[in-house]
Image 1: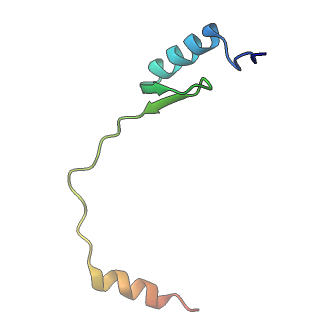
Image 2 (image 1 turned 60 degrees about the vertical axis):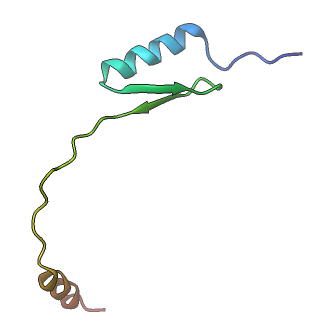
Length: 64
């Protein structure tokens, strides 16, 4: 005896449409109906300079 799927074609189509509308890229669909998505994020090209001496002194100021 086979078990019924935990999702329907209609519910899967709605989930795909909602993900696409949110700007997500669907990379795959798992056998249980889970959508695997990839959210494209912009990565900062420039990072603020960090002064290592300043960072250490901030930790030293915190009393244990």
